[in-house]
Image (tube, rainbow, N blue to C red; front, side, top):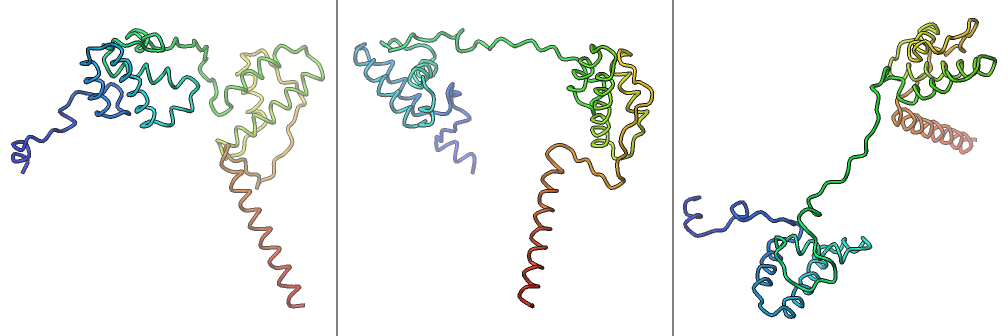
Length: 226
């Protein structure tokens, strides 16, 4: 069967030249190739503008961009292989401009010392470490410890001792923060459930809705029976 198809002269896209701008299809490529064969420059320019209009019709979402006409003319040049001599309303793009990559923004990222606490914890620790010793700093350390314990329980469902959190603070601060003696964290009830971000709240919301609906239904049933 395949042999008969090949003998019939069928033309497969996989065997054709690769499209530089595939969203406009192979018919636009054929139109551009015919355009380059027009000898009269004015006529060639007129036909180029007509092709750009067809490209706009084929890709209407491009109108959402402010400079979409300029973009379409650039794509016309790309489709032609940058071999197009017309009076374009915009400067003709070059291969270097099209193929150039944006300059990468250097990011200073340190490896996380404790992933389960997150990167913001390190920034908070740096802030507290610069505070002078006193009641304010002690209160900040205690608030930090409570938050870190909650983060710990999100990813590790087992209970955690206060001393473990205090040690983590001193390790993460590289000894710049010493947890004052006498600090104790409020106890967490055994049925407390700290959910991972974006997971627990949705489920809890659905559960509350069901409970409220169930309660209202029971009340209405009572009133009807009464």
